[in-house]
Amino acid sequence: MSAPDAAPWSSSYRLVAAEKWKAKSAVLGNAVTEAFVEFASPLPGMRVLDLASGTGEPGISLAQRVGPQGSVTALDQSSELLEIAAERARIKKVSNFTIQQADAHQLPFADHSFDLATCRFGVMFFSDAQRALSELHRVLKPGARACFAAWGTMEQPYWQSTMKVVHRHAGGVMLPPGGADPFRFSAEGSLSALLSAAGFHESEESTRRQPWTWPGDAEEVFEYACAVAAPFRPMLERVAAEDWPTIRTEAKAAIERYRVGDEIRFGADVVLASGKA
Image (cartoon, rainbow, N blue to C red; front, top):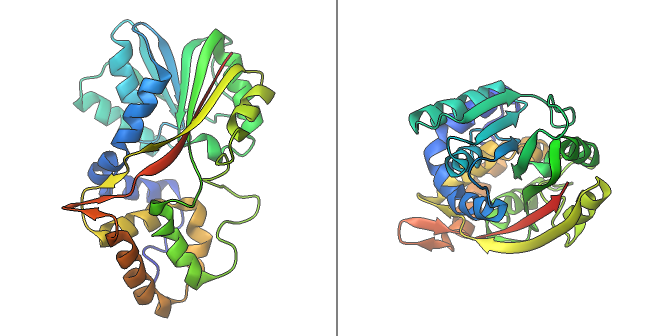
């Protein structure tokens, strides 16, 4: 038995993972998306930029909130994921939602173009976060808010029962030094400090516990976690084939501790931060 999937984290692989788990992953992140949209406080008629949009949320929800007089531009580096987002918007008959393939470090928009910016679980992965936030500041209208959701500490149920279990067997570093780090902004005040450094003012930040619920069994949770956890892929590929059965057994036992009926209810600690341009 080998790793859950040894394929590289390419755009095509991300597409396969997104399609396979789209229904259950939507449920998993729904409460966080709803809380984040409320935090962003979109108003009818606003022009919104959503960075690192992936397969469409929170952009689609934001588009529904700003109404036909407003609009949402969903930006991501992956055209394949954006096509999924566009199709989801079409299915929901959301016509004020458009996609844009681009790099957050070099936004293809004029100065002062947007009334609101959002980024859900993306800011942690910008290679030069201050540059990306400075670019975002440029395209926002004066006084417009930029709102972010990021992972809190790794010391929480979802990660401890999946990647932490793998790490006990893989040894070495869990995340490559200098590489993508989902927990980059888990330290209190770190994201708001970066916002200030990029020129934003009136920064706010708080960590909130939100539902993080998988509507299925423990084996599925572990397979999903391994499939989409790109920053951990070097660790996953380091695991010896003979260790995977033991890892799966341990992970299943750890995950089952959070079962309530037909659901796995982890809860998630999420950092919400904002600043004004």
